Length: 243
Ligand SMILES: [Zn+2]
Image (cartoon, rainbow, N blue to C red):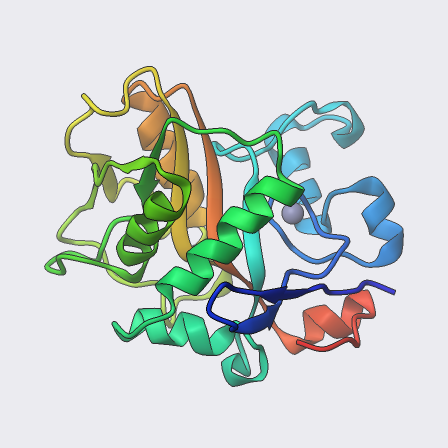
């Protein structure tokens, strides 16, 4: 049975870390049998589409980012059910939560993703017209926690609209051709840790990473607070533990 570890922050806040096993490319929790393989069926499908070959022979991620690390689960249909959901809601509405979540992300990067290193943190951009996003707030807290710097270099085209309400199939491409690097000086030749609050389709991470690489970054890994799943996903993998 997949299982989840309790995380306790310095200020005493407790929540459940992402259950083990999980897909190391997108942090989707996996059933025990898929855990042996190390990759979820969605990532595998994308490997196949992109390579048109035998997925077992593909050496690395099908996305422009390499790996995506998530601290915990974000239960899309019942956010209040998950212990991390309340904290993510708090950063979305401008409240607290950033310090605890960044502490948990740093913990997960250190203990579960020792192969991820970075020179600078970049965050997924705020919606047009907004100065700071939940991702931006989280990036600042994570930078403080890990003693690294943030470069807020990504920006969205004014025509960008949120993917809420879009059909599932179009969500992945919603940020395609809508995101760009405003100035590349801070990222050329550097390894990037791309930060967002929640990862759902992986589209934002993918298209942001593509722009960062085009602008001269030498590699992108992703870190998020919550991996979005719904209750059906958890039933499907046989996870019945605490959330
Ligand atoms: Zn995956």
